[in-house]
Image 1 (cartoon, rainbow, N blue to C red):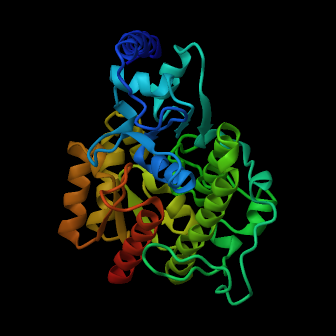
Image 2 (cartoon, rainbow, N blue to C red):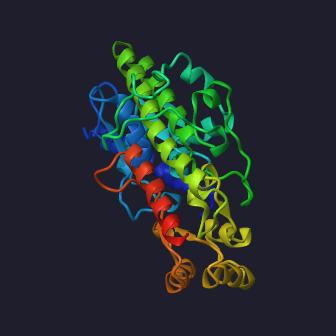
Length: 355
């Protein structure tokens, strides 16, 4: 759908939402004073970790089979966004419906756009003064819901977040060779960290009485990210440079942080990402990687699967190449930290099986 058409639909949705709101419908899903709305439950989970018990965050896209790229907002979605105190979303053209609705909204809410934070690399102001405990990584560490003690031993070379990286703006855009910057930034730990701190800053302005709570919750989220970073570090140490293939580049930042070698033909992943059919040559080359077991894992997004991606999965499974699924929304019953750790652990296990 062309942007102009989407914008027209968004304007209509806002108009309808205004009528619903006039009838007394509360679409925010939060309290009467402050409402926080996230485009997907990925960003909603991060926002909720910061908001804690003070504010309930509403996520618009929660279905495990939903594709945020093609999501069409309902009038109630439009009301939730236009009436929100704070909107947290991916940006970068990924969840375009948010930009469409915001563009058609008069009084715009505060926003935290993950992709904009990724692009700016604005992390230093968000992390100054954080204490990560003694050198053994245990004093002051916060345990995740999986009861794993967090460690602070992180390698800059493996590409994941560390205090040095954050303080120095050490985010890198290297390795983006699939037709431009990759918008799937929820797999980038530094961006998730930046979003948490940006949410804390915005909520502190909206709710000054809760500022200390939001700051502490963002710091706790930062500490818990260290567990995920440790898992990725171990993956890089054990399986760095292992060749992998992807049906599309959803997991790009995980692959990059783990220093894996994505050998999928760019023509294939670019076409899948853009919703077009890859060329016969690109399909044949990708299939050959799997049939000949030139890769150790196929990373697969089931939320946007089509005939061609299913064909690649079949080729992988027939050849004994493990398939690791990556998603665009959170599975039920897990938070962002658990989800990211589980994905990295699953990838590590698959690579171990294939070694």
